[in-house]
Length: 425
Image 1 (cartoon, rainbow, N blue to C red):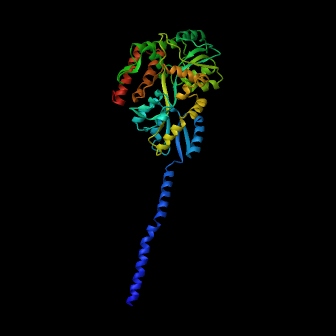
Image 2 (image 1 turned 90 degrees about the horizontal axis):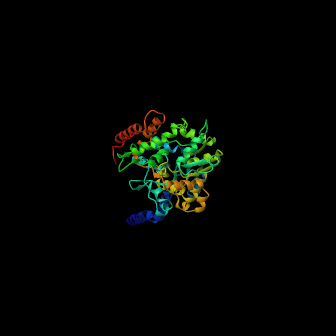
Image 3 (image 1 turned 60 degrees about the vertical axis):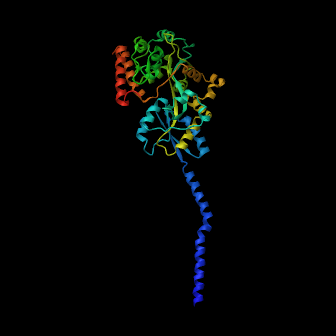
């Protein structure tokens, strides 16, 4: 009996030892499964899709790149078109919803406000990628030393003319003025511009010696003597009837474009976003830098840079940034130019004489950019537009004198900067 018990206990001990060894023996298989789970987890971090907010009527330029990106990375690109001026407003509405974008396009003047509001995220990009772009275009997408986007297109307004009505480009705005006087009759006009929009009239103010911000945002040079001279010059075009009354206010751009496309104006000041529309309307357009001002100075147009930005709302920042790098490469940038006229600030294209010679519009924008001024990207810039527009409009409609209108505008700008931004930076 004692021997039987000993035997039983021995067998139990052996079974227990084998049981204890079982998990250790199976450990390599478990490790393999664990590694498999880890790999699946990493793959699951790759999103099925990225949501991209594109500029209005520019989606066609995104489609080819979206297909190629999905083929290469297995990530679908779903894009939505918005007017680029409404991107920030829509981010405020949809930023924390399922409709939030991973990547958005914006103009460089929206960088500062978007950073302050927490809409976009800083990015770190290799020098190999950054070296593809012009320094000025990269710098324009920085805020307080940090880079927030990659350049998509550079733009500034230029002199666009109907070659059938104006065979040669005048060298000066004085010549343009005289020719406009001769051409203006009934529904026909000469040169047209929407100078109540400060983006378009900045070149006139700058050329006469006015400035937006000096050493800080409390130093506003839009009511100095030179600014008054600029507004007086602008007003002569309205006083003489060279700009029709419809070329003022919120519908001014539509009115100007309609007259030009109907062959009722021989030239306009507009940007590369308009090239395709004008060509599609059948106008035989020519494109050149702006003629010099009556004082001999260049028209210091505003230069804008559009970029692609990774939002703070995305859960896929790495992939969102990869898409911004992909969409801005030379191949995709050239396709975008062909479809939209948006000029990519790629050094390789600027140095390509053949490409420049075959693209008159791009060459004109690049030449005008030499005289252009980068539009301030500080949040306070938002306070400039409406008061200056109102000043030009009140003068053009004989409701105020230039000096009075600009004094009121700058007073309002200063008050709004103090109220909305806390004064100087």
